[in-house]
Image 1 (cartoon, rainbow, N blue to C red):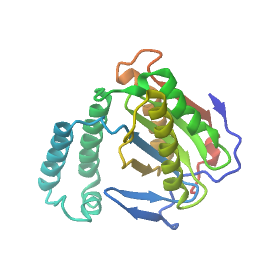
Image 2: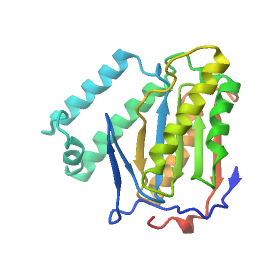
Image 3: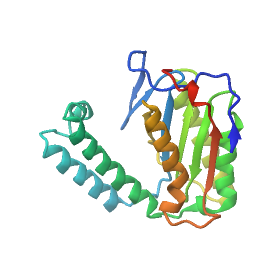
Image 4: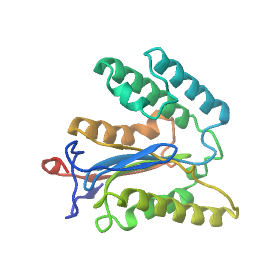
Length: 232
């Protein structure tokens, strides 16, 4: 476990501050200094039938509450539901998605220590200079991390840099070519200290939840003065 030393901005999402939004297949939100929970997965981590089942489940859940998932603002409509209802839907979708990831589909090359080391070393390389890295876990077919970035566009640029570098190095090591990571990533701005602590614990427990052995994942966590967890 590393110790916090960075002077870069770090904190919780501020709903009153400027937010940078990029619309791709998934919306990506970033804010200077706000911690983000980010997930990447390998290109073969979700078989088509698993993805189709998840999207079918999402459609049924949303339509049962009068929300059309085909509209651009379905997420906003979901969040306008009664809080317990919206929370239950999000929990169901979250659990089913991450349970599928933890099922170990695909080649799972990150189970190999050498390939996992390429990812973990890349994540830590510019820590405290380009970003503040707080936690990560490298799983056999996906990666979860928590980090904050100094500018609104820095998160997406850094994620693209990480993924490009690690894909090139891992493919070279394996003697193969082609896509390694799924193009899209999932990211979520952390809004409360309770949510931050929950996500840190989720990352720490992910290997055990997935039934992995001691050498089948890489976990990292930095000691953080929670007094810094004010609005970014």
